[in-house]
Length: 361
Image (tube, rainbow, N blue to C red; front, side, top):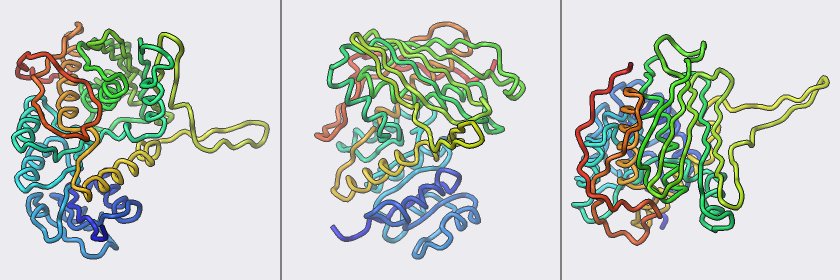
């Protein structure tokens, strides 16, 4: 197939601009056909030097632009549901950055809308599934060489948090990656959440409960703990250790260049997720483009986006109440797709309750 896939990128902020660069300079088989952002100047800056791109301040106008055959959503999470449904209405395949939709009720509406189409259109941007170390760990666990996985120990640290960051966002924004990674690595749904709150770091902004220790239980009897620390001050670190019946395996220790001089060795520590997971993002978008050009949609789907939102909501309730909180999932709609990636299969039929108001204690 020689024709390039024309992609409309919705959102020209930090993530969106990086995807525009990636589609133009790194990924093969695609081109940026349109960019939409409420800030027209920011959108123009993101596409500077790229020919043949139309810029809009309205997302749906970008979807209708000439030559658009697929959509990459990198706008704020609150705009995702409307954009996803608009793409579905046009039959456009979508790569949507996480969160798919911030609240579980909206995420479930997206799942149900896609199910009514009878085919997949959405891939959700949980890029850790495309990281070489995570893929290696997944393959090892799937092989059974270490026996059943008993626990996952996870670390997620950022240099600093944005000014708007709240205590709840440590769970429903940052830890959402660990939520999906745990489901994917273990092949199990997460069934309950407990959040422990140590004394906040002196480096955390006033009122921010940072760090936190988030504990997940799975339907298969495993336990996952996540240290989330978004104002550690020294670097961006993501690690995961699987403890199994016959051994353990850990990823995330590899760093950048090590420089030895003047009697000491200094190692570089990534300062940003776009640095640490640059290769994963490249693999993710290339995989999406390749599948889309074949008329397929693979990778994490709308159900994975919904499950992450539902678990995160339970986590925020656990943070606010200080008690163990069960995760409530709706029944999973049937969607026939021979290339559906392995994921947890939900057999429960509980009805999701309306999300509680999110208040930072």
